[in-house]
Image (cartoon, rainbow, N blue to C red):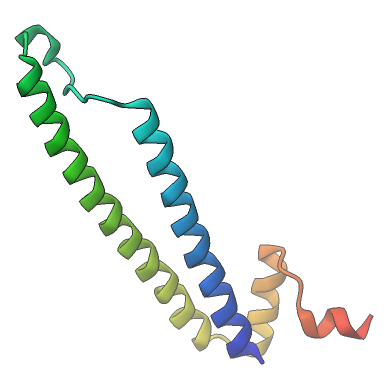
Length: 109
């Protein structure tokens, strides 16, 4: 039962991070048509240069977002492995500290 709860929590966190990432991508693409690095406006870039710079920025941003998602997943996996080491009492205390209800205790009430 505990393992199932941990797995469900992990999947919820992963789904949330993916949804947040999608929302962020949609918001950013809606507001930024071209990207100019800080201090580059004085270079009088041509339209073609601006477009190419923006394309490079967008490709890099997408790669960074993908890597950030991998980092987030690794952090969740790290925490899951750490929690496995805790005793039942320690896990219950951790849930209380985090403000997470224990489904077993909730059924008793």
